[in-house]
Length: 456
Image 1 (cartoon, rainbow, N blue to C red):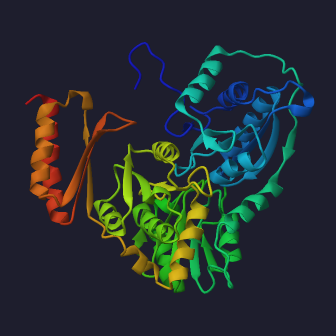
Image 2 (cartoon, rainbow, N blue to C red):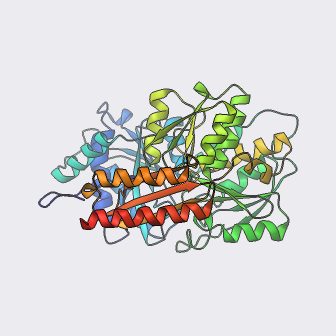
Image 3 (cartoon, rainbow, N blue to C red):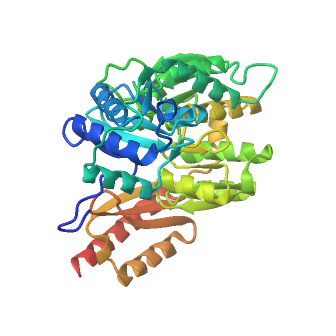
């Protein structure tokens, strides 16, 4: 939150988001895109060398008018636009690099409801923007500076055919072998009525799987509605009904995925990372024999990595922190419980379709069911509690309360206390092998935090 008299930051943790038509208007989309063009697109001022941007979106209905506004803002600022249409967010990131574009733009609110939307930018090469660059775009927007582009207005071209380039890239990441890597697998794919509704089933089928799709009929209003990675019930039921070997659920923009086994039991991002990390280490492709995760990772994941001889690097919550740590340390694999997995040898950002291909190929290669893969990680029960209040008011008494709680766990669990990044709350998380113990300890800790906030 901004202090009194200060303007709040426009960019959030993942671009600019808001309710379409309210916080996120066509006017804002146009002026924001023109400001981004001024920051991300400078180059030789000749018509033959105007900067190029790729623009993609998810299927939500507001994406249609926001895409038009974004394209108008870019072209008015002298940027040539390649309009990709409906495509997963990581597809925009990949094509930004593959087409040597100056930058990429995604119109999506990911796993949010249909009423929301967002605008996110990728820099040259398809990488997420650092905070300083986002601040520069926002400063340009606030200045409201406009000028006639020296090289003339940009031209707009439809580039939907480039989806095939992205699909070819995804399939090229799979190992060469006599038969297709997913041959023999029956898979249910829940596309969340989102950006991957066409591309994900195509990728899975071309990799050899028999694919049954659900959540693949977007109407602009049903994205993420009771389906996808935030609502696994429909996928679990479909897997059991069709006798499938596994199920994959993407979110609205397909930058992440989760899975379920043949009995409909879910695998979260930590379990998927366990499968990928151990497989990459066996193949000698896990740089530094390490994986990067956030502080929210399950204690069972840490135990599984220790047993596999893999180091764990922890970052604050947020995929941009994971990505930054991976680049700084030269690591190849990282991710979050949410299923946002980053494989830097193949992608610059999290890619749900890529992750699903790699996960299914690893399971199929070893000839084990998905349930066996899930058991590679002993999953500790995890309990979360939000306590309303200002984290800055917490002091030494809270530290002492945490130490008492840790003593009750007896070294067989972990505790995390952190301020929310989006609202005035303190988030408490306890993991323990014994679920009842975790519930009891977090209840006591939450009460002590409430008393500390009340000054008792």
